[in-house]
Length: 408
Image 1 (cartoon, helix red, strand yellow):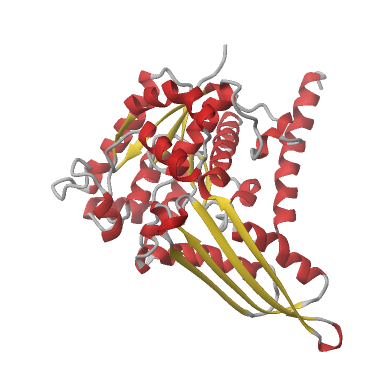
Image 2 (image 1 turned 135 degrees about the vertical axis):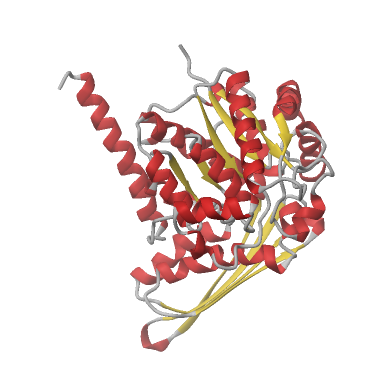
């Protein structure tokens, strides 16, 4: 019997979520390849992962509209997906809309709150406990209605302001007390708490607090629920974690690294608010500290440029010093479709978290560090070493399965 894995997307009508759903159904319909999916290359293909075709989608969103509307906008403004691919999955996307319910924008900041539809359940009459129970009920209804073997919750919502003092939520007791006292826990933490407390694997693809809070991590350990985050690594930071080890390995001293990012989608608009931008800058800017063993000038800028739509561009200027004190430079431009870079990683993470859950591997999943700018519980930012950890995980499981198959 084929297992059915539910994918609950927080921010389900957003560009990344919609592109992930388009991609999964296009793969299932034979309308596209699996290029961009890490789980579709060796050695990850040796793992017993849920088939892409078996994924069932639902989610929360704070905006009205439909997945089909988002898909059409992506096609019209960005050309991704193309018309043939979108036509091949149109009916599938329309069916998903029936499984998307209203979410909350509680404590997400003014900018996100202004995006929320009037129906969003961030009414001040609801306590945080009531919000959590509504979220949990939505998860449970999805699993029951679709007869799912498990669900994986993935946060792909807009960036929130970070808590002023995240350390105050460093234990389960502190989280419980904050819920009881209606402390300003952000929505991402409510979604994460509701998922993990109910036994659902959780992925934080955003820079939001969510499962980065110590109390949420302690809860996941206690309940043996796999989770990982934070902030998907898809563009400029991906290149940083590949290039910085080259400079370190060749003993070329980086004197400065300036990065300027422009993007034009809703995420870019939200990041115009400095409070919402802070977490993103923190996760993007911190990777060099984990690779270079010295301080250097390291600055990242993010600016909203509406004309770009879902495309994003990064310009980086790196000044470095080599032999005989020779000063040199490397400059690059990275241009990519924000959602097309992120969406396959969402599918990868769902499959890998479902696998971990099946294997009883709860808590943080350090072998997934390569997917994130700020991987929880992992200080290693060298991309090749992060990949090695992922491949070692796959090889270890493959060896175990082979031994079991041999009767040993």
